[in-house]
Image 1 (spheres, rainbow, N blue to C red):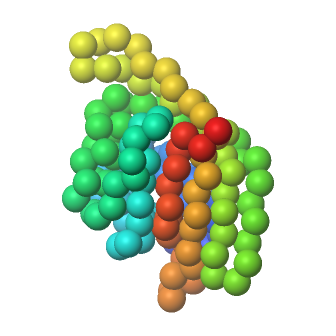
Image 2 (cartoon, helix red, strand yellow; image 1 turned 45 degrees about the vertical axis):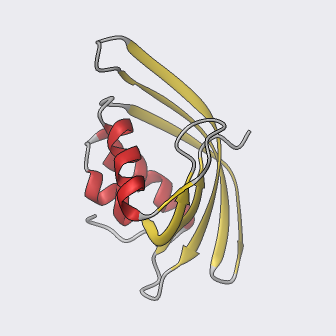
Length: 126
């Protein structure tokens, strides 16, 4: 990533850009080493860099455009929660259009360098 996410909302903006551009390594760099991710509605959270990378690669394969509308950011010390209404449009491997969206609840943690990383990513929290 070219810039450091100095605010929790920056993480969301960087996520959108990296996803649109298919930069899986940059997406993964936004996650903490001990992060958990809910890959689809009703699914159990996954942990670990390899499973999260695989889930993010599936989203990136859609060649998506994602738009976000941050509803609220609550921060205390080194932890923040971001509520974000998002929409994603892309194309499935069979050529069919894909559209999805929800309101995410993302718990973020401030890193020693002052940047923010995703600790819990639940895109389907509504």
